[in-house]
Each structure stands twice: as structure tokens, then as C-alpha cells.
Length: 453
Ligand SMILES: [Zn+2]
View 1 (cartoon, rainbow, N blue to C red):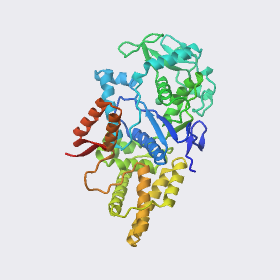
View 2: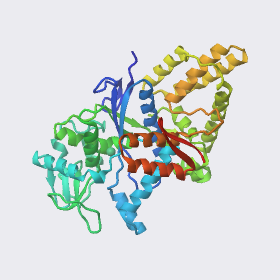
View 3: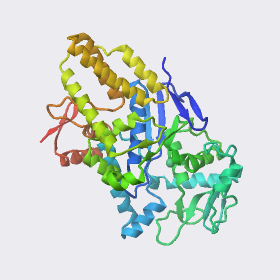
View 4: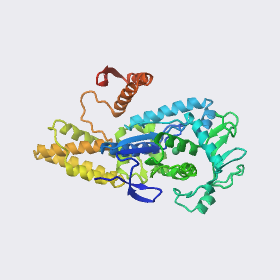
């Protein structure tokens, strides 16, 4: 039986992923703080965890994917002040931009996207419990966690505590007991959005937001907590510290992905509009970015320049031509050897560069079989190529008819879910979104159907 192995940040090595419940997988991906357009690094994040989720689902695992929207944060407050707008307006604009980019990339939306602002009561409760247990203390500007009282603090930092302490920023205004202590509750400053709490009106710190939402939706001992390498410390360390201080089981595994690197000179000279994901998607086939992400291992840094994007677009032309050429082949079972090798690559800490190379190799072999007139062999290899590209979320387009893109298909799926749940307001909102995008929406016994107007 195949076992997924992933690099675990806390262990510092690749280990077997043993889920809390067999056949299920609960994952929390730290989501965006919505105060600006998503950048290409966010695109990599979206794609890395989309590939993980799709692969697990493809192997038959029932995945619960939660990713939050941070809508209470200093950056949002500052942006609103700069622009003379309310924080709600800033949040609404950039959350919409986030999901437009998500859909544009063909990334499945999370099953749940908790918003920090709707969890404040639970955050206040958690902080109160930490204060009661004597692991948090109040100062004139907030409430802080006393990290010296947390066993094993520094696990994810992978650095001795002395070094961390020396590297931590010391703010003279703070009355923290240690530079490593971090804020759980920030007392209100004039003009900021605030909520009531026993320590005075204010708002939660970012680290408290995520620990509360992940435990609330996924429960104790959920399977995976993840995000960019920069979140390892202090964000994830500090989320974990709160759970540990409360004696609660937190995430069983920790996964972190590498950065997208854009050389400064390239950025100014030729990268131009690729600085935001929104611009990248408006100018290129979104599948090209997925292909680029797949061709880099998720833990390695990844460079994005126009050359690599164009190269990926040319590869897609080849894949689509293959899809057209093999569209009418008789149905066949996918080549088992190819599928087995694909699973070996993916189970080995998501070796997507190898898995992608296997896809292209399989396409070449299928084309060769067709050239040689071996239809049965070609059909079996083509079925394998389609299966593994689907498992990585890479759509092959044979063209013809109304091509329903992934983002639209996802909206249709969400609308059916909303209707099943009798959430007609949401169903209507999604219908409006589809109509605005130029689709005719029909309700049929089989669910929502769309066609071009
Ligand atoms: Zn987080």
C-alpha cells in the first residue's frame, strides 16, 4: 500500500504521514491577509497545496481543506487609513481579488475559509484561558504569552532559543518579559476597529487568530498545518505555543514551501507586470504557472521569469495537441506501470518535477505508439497521461464545444453544494457570478448546467 511521505518541519526530515483517521486528511493552510493584490508567491502557495489536495483526493482520501482569510490586521488598518476607506471596503476588494486569482489558477477553493473577524469571541476565550493558567500576562498595551512557560518552545524555529532571543526585535515601548513573548491581544488605539475583552477593547494578534480557527474547524490533532517558509517562525511556532500551553494537541505534521525568487534586475528590466499574480494571469495561460510550480520541488526556491513562462506555454501547446490527437481513441485502462511510478514520485515528498517528467515521457510514448499504429498501447498510455495530469490539476484541452474552464466548473460545484445545503442566497449569488461571466445557467435534475450565451 502506498504511504504519502512528506518533509516535516518539526522533525527536520521526510516522514510517513500518518493521518488522525485512516482515509481522511485535515489540512490548514495559512491564508492571505487581504490588503493588497496577491503576488506570484501567493500563486505558488495556492498551487502547492492544491496539488497536494488533488493528489490525495485522487488516491481516494477524503480531504478537509481549511484556509483562513485574515481580515483583522495592522496592514489592513494602515491601508484603509492611507486610502481614506473603511477596513471593510479594503477587505472586500482584496478578498475578491484573492478568489479571482484562485479561480483563475484553477485552484480548488478551501472547504472552509474562516474569517478572523467572526472568531473574536473564541479568541478572547482562548486568551482568557491562557491568562488563567498563568502563561499569559497583561501589560499597558496588551496581553502577551510568556514563552518561557511553554515546553519545547522553538521546535519549528530549528534554532537555539538564545539565538532566537538575540535576533528578536526589541521594542522599547513594550513591557514584554522576554523578546520572544508575543502579543495575544492588542489594546485599542484611536481609530482602529475594536472588540470588547476583559483587558479592554482591542483586537487579537495574528498568531491567536490561526490557532483558534484551525482547532475550531479541524479539531485537536489535525493532520497538517502549512504555509510559506517565512511562517515557520514566529507565526507557526507561536500558534503551536498557545495550543501547547493549553495542553491541546495541535497539528500532527508541518509543511512549508519555498519562496518565489525574482532577481531584482530581471524584475525591473523584463518582468514588468508579473509582479502581481493578477497581472500574470491576465497575460498568460494560467496553466503555465501551474506547470512551472510542478516543475520545481515545493521546498526549493523557484525563479519566475518570462522565459520560463513562455517555455511552459509552449509545453502546454504540445499537451493540448496530444489531447486532441488522442481524444477519439477507444476507452482503455490506464497503463498501470505509469500510474505506479507516478504514485512513487508523489508519495516521495511530492516529487512533482519527476511526476511532470513522467507525464511528458508518457505523452511522447503514446505519440510514438500512435505513429507505429499501435492503438491499444496508445490508448492505455493516453489514459495514464490524462489520469496523472488530472491528479496534479493540470487540465489538458482537446478543444471543441463549450470548454468549461476549471474556475467555472468549481463555481457550478459550489452552487450545487449550496443548493443541497438549502443555502439559496449563496446559490443565487453564484448564479449571478456565472451569468456575469457570460454563462447561461440551467437547473436540471442532475444539478446546475452551464452553456455559453
Ligand atoms: Zn496562520
